[in-house]
Length: 309
Image: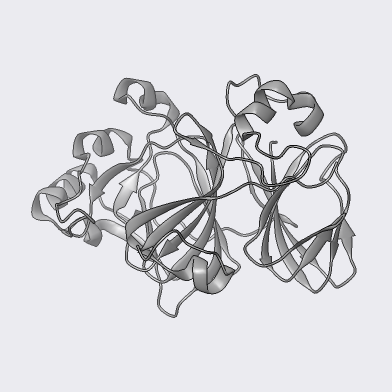
């Protein structure tokens, strides 16, 4: 099979910008600040639709529900929807300090657990990630900071570099800082609890909703000062929900799927690659079916390969 390409879904955000247009040559819908591009999504209100090829016009949900083994391979989860959601995030301002509910609390809070990983595609000098708590901060300290409006003083900060990555399990307090372009691979969930939003207004001119009670019930208060991840070979993230590899390809080198009979989702971070008659450049995403053709690098390239474990 040939690679399958989907139309992205663009979402304006108060903290977004135009990097998708400038760095990835995307044509954005209007002049709004776009913070998120949902590249691979199978949710009730958002659907990836195939662009071109024999599957043109079909949704990701149709492929998963009706052609699962043919497209994705055998032995995959018996879930109603495709279990991953993949995004590009363009942060020109700081995102809210937030948390996703852990599995053991999500249902009672009315949400979905969400474990994710971030790959830093581009970072301006001094850009920061806010991840985990500063060492020694207690729940009581944090609750006082919520009341005082000083939550940022409790959160650990890291200055990442382009090419690095970090794992964000459900329950980890976090915020992406201004000046970062990030590829995010996550569980198929859209539950986020904001505990602090820098006292700013949303695009509608009103303060954005906070979820303090839910955040306090979700935060892992033993998660102190995590650092950027150290890869194990090509693998930069692996958990029960996904496996992500960073492939460094020289000009003319090729690679197939991680294992026979299993799909892969590729995202091109740098360079150009080709599969069959299709050519892909920086910022392109595509799904390689379980019996897809090999990928060949036109130039030196950096590519992320995501699949299910």
